[in-house]
Image (cartoon, rainbow, N blue to C red):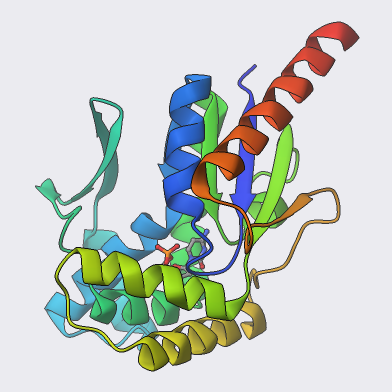
Length: 228
Ligand code: DC
């Protein structure tokens, strides 16, 4: 049986960077499910398909092959064989992915892929609905969050460090809009699973968060062994 860790939380809470490091320390596979939604959004944007157009969307979903590959432990997203890992990290795709992910047919399509991965490997999977919908029986669930101001500040610094032009107030507005959409959508809205551990990282640095996740995971793993 594989051991599954679900990490959910809003945009910019630092999920992916801490999840990546925690997975490496635990020897787990890191699965970034947001990247899967981004990959589908990229395809639809390129083809000029409106995700609200059910017929065109169904056709497109039939043509899309989304795969994950791992090189040196790093997740790569393959869209019909093309490595799109870098192309999906733009503000335009962030916005499109948030809209695309609210469409039931898209979520249904990714649900199987995500569950299959989790059944085969020890995974640390991050997203919005992993603990509530995709892996309701995950061995450990964490809800990672931080204040809007702190999330905006982190994203701002990250973009500045990459040499990208950005305005703090705009980033803050985008985060608020994405939060609103992710929390209020009808299907799989973002919320904390009842049995998830809440981690507010507003006053924690990355290393502290990784340490906490790793120690929670080890406690659970030892607990499960003791119960066998
Ligand atoms: O985590 P991210 O910013 O890469 O995610 C991109 C979008 O995909 C985000 O707006 C929310 C959505 N998403 C989702 O609905 N469910 C997931 N499990 C992961 C991401």
